[in-house]
Image (cartoon, rainbow, N blue to C red; front, top):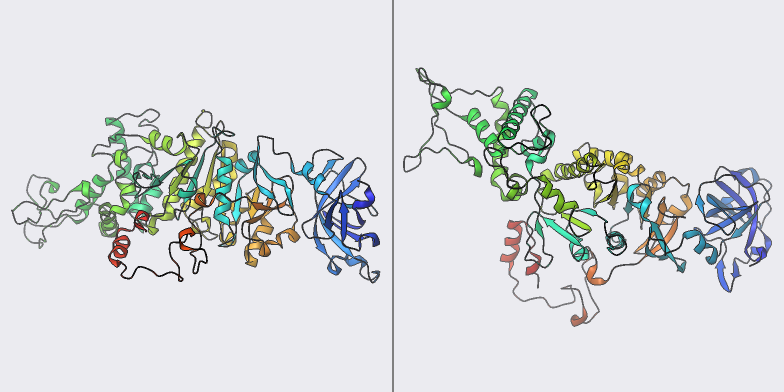
Amino acid sequence: MSNKETYLGDVQDVSGTSVSISLSAESLTGFVYIDGQGYRVGQIGSFVRIPVGYINLFGIISQVGASAVPKNQIENEVVGNRWMTIQLIGEGPKNGLFQRGLSQYPTIGDEVHLVSEKELKNIYGQPDKPYFVKLGHVSNADSIPALVDVNKLVTRHSAVVGTTGSGKSTTVASIMNALSDVERYPSSRVIMLDLHGEYGQALQDRAYIYKIDGNYKSKLKEKKLYIPFWALNFDELCEISFGEFKDEKVKNVVMERVLKLKLDSLKISPRKGASADTLSVDSPIPFSIHQLWYDLYVETFGTYYKVAGMQPIDNLAYEKDANGIDLIGDASKGIAPVFKHVETGAGEAKINYLPGSHQIGKQLLLLGTKLRIPRYDFIFKPDNWLPDKDGKVVDDLNLLLKNWIGSDRPVTILDLSGIPADILQTTIGALLRLLYEALFWARNLSQGGRHRPLLIVMEEAHIYLNYDSKGMASKIVQRIVKEGRKYGIGAMIVSQRPSEINPTILSQCGTFFALRLSNATDRGHITSAISDNLDGLTGMLPILRTGEAIILGEAVKLPMRTTIQAPPKNRRPDSQDPIIYDEVPIEDSQNPGGWGLDMEPNPNYEELIETWRSQNPKIDKVK
């Protein structure tokens, strides 16, 4: 190929990484042929090269037309000249490998050439390299695979952003399929926080699914999700159990009680790595929160008789049931005792021993309710991880973590769709902290992240990582994106509203998969978060087709507009839009309903109320 075929024009102005060129008269046709293939000149997002000595500088066209004229050239501009602005992104020796960054800049008069598809193949990398995964193909060059560097993708963090309906969930599923290829990556491990239960169907052949109301007999063979309350730190435990303490004195009393219960548990059941000297209120040591609640409840609401020579605690005044038996309640079931209403008089008194007991009454009533409601059982009654009165448990945290990040399948899906909304953010924060601390302290072990890195995928991240959020999740994710790389923990942030995500978190993402984004504020956050000055490329985000993404950042050799290869229809996330009218014949349609079909004449709305009350969609019942 001669230089004349690819020649576009000459450099006329250089300002940092922004270069203005004037197109030559020979390229005014706007269409050139290279190796028998036609190329349109001046397409936004196209690549150009500038030969400088023994190397080529590479750039992306970001602006074309009158607005691309440099300010210092406007007065001398000749009518009819055409201009183009490009953003420099890297360099490479002629016929060699491309690398990001610049060692030198072009000068006035340097020639600018179009990059052909053949040259792009050398730049983008070769698909036979094991650290590259193929996600599709470059949109304007079907023969060029879209390759992503796994090393940079996982530990340097990433973000997948796109408006609802842009193909975001399908893109994530495609990435997960590529990363969980056990033939290529037999030791890969990924954990997904799935807030809407979308990914079980898409990844069922390579993932274990944990859900708080999971049913192993279901089609997806879901397992029960448990997060033992005693594995939480004290702040997480308070938020989930008691709510906010307005009186710091009462909070300190609860803290002392928890610490004492953990110390007593450790004396009865010694545990390797823990001792009375190193124990803190945040240590993951089993204790009975049911007994803690019961004791505090009695001390707060109990009615006592004064009897000479006896402790008041031994003289509780209970109401009696129809058989004359004291209504002492049941700590294990969260059933509160019922006390007599005693009028203070001679020899009688109601005594409350807990300092500020009037301040904790509301929190105790709230915790008692949670101990009784089945939807909170995944935390307060975690099956084999539920401690007895003395803090003894059947299984310890090692089995829990082995299930999540040490199983024989590369992906673990934590389906959080059934978690009560009032504790969702704190629960997510606790989950992430458990994973981070486990791999942080195991960093020198084979189970740790340095030897076997972990990718954490956070779906609907704007819900719990939003800009104003000061919750547990936001704090721990900021720590993960800042420090996780050193310990083999990578984060993938998935969101339809990047503008609502904490900017500290977004700025630490090294790679972006940007699908269609219609909102200008969201596009602005992506533009400001990426390291390259590619306003022209991100300006294409509103017009991307469904399933098309611009991939930018460290995991790709060059920013590229990519058509993501979607998984088979029966392996796509359960996030497709309902079809209002389907022209496909009923027997061939995947749509279970729609406005164009005659529905059942007498629908059973008792089932609707049943699923509503049970807070379980019961997918198997859908006909």
